[in-house]
Image 1 (cartoon, each protein chain N blue to C red):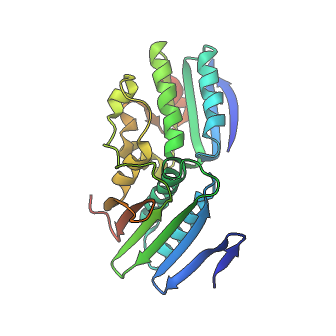
Image 2: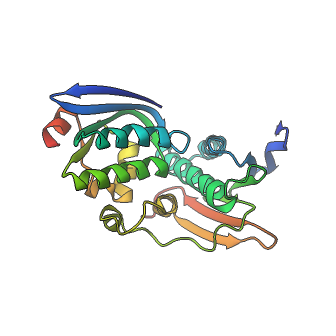
Length: 110
Length: 156
């Protein structure tokens, strides 16, 4: 997994490439929750190059949403591949984690 | 052809319709089971969407066996047995542990967000959503077996 950090319109955008599973979810958790705890409360995750997400990855997103809820923050996903989008739909995550087609749409939403 | 490792045969055909993968109890090795399952399912004619469902379910079942069944024991093994009977594809994932009493109920995602439930149980939840049938059995000697069945086309 590779994560790239970009700041667009003042909002932190994390681009995730590769696989997000049990072998690297702790690293991703440190990165994502670390940003939230440092005060980032508007974040976008660009999953355009994410190949796979396991329940360990979903768990990290759940924790991030919980923490952001406390600070009235927002997290959005963009460019999610069809199969991964299906996982979010099946698991019910779309009810609290909006998915947009483009980074621009997510930036407007958070 | 069988593939061997220090621990013996890691991948072997039990018969023409049944393939067994013997994994060390190590995170990351579930990918071997995922890839074997995907290859087998592709050969017998499953469509890519169903193969994706299968890969995710197999990975989650292996991780569950490693983390909760075998409780991370480095000397334990996880056995993944897969079979295609011409209609359905079944996968059994067996561990050596006593860590699981029964499958957890499906989590309430809204409650998880409201902090009323810990962020656990997502793996089994995904398996249930992706597979056509899931059952959990205690093995007679020691260990647990999670059996999943996938049909050629989605029934839900």
